[in-house]
Length: 174
Image 1 (cartoon, rainbow, N blue to C red):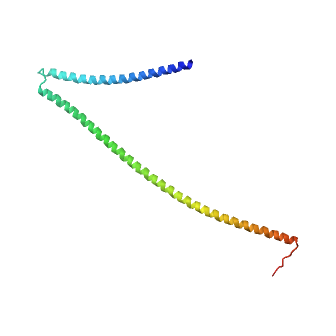
Image 2 (image 1 turned 90 degrees about the vertical axis):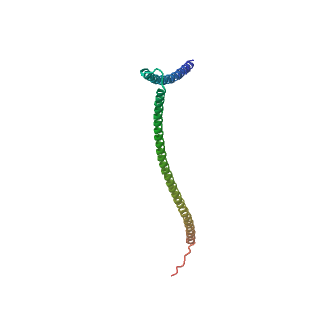
């Protein structure tokens, strides 16, 4: 029962948080719209004041041309600003691409160096393994020879013991 109440409260809290987020978003949009409308209203008031101070009550062709010219110059200025921003962004992009290209080349070079080191190490290891294998074969041969000599020594001792037991003397030849 208590768990169900906690889950219900959490669900309600999440719902309220979602509503709060949505309302924040709507508030930001409304503020932006109000700001745009305020700017537009200020422009319209300015235009209205300009018209009131003019001697004629109807807009003439020159006034319309002047307003059109003003609007064109505004948009051309904005367009010029946008072109400058675009050129700056392209320059930054080219600089970043150049930097990344240099870094990539450096990393490729480092990778090739590492591959060469690994290749050299592998070759040295294989060579060392060959030497070790050769030494192991020689040790095996030496151990076999030592075993044969020990066997011969044992046989000779046994023969000496038998001769001593039989009281056999070896003639000394000088």
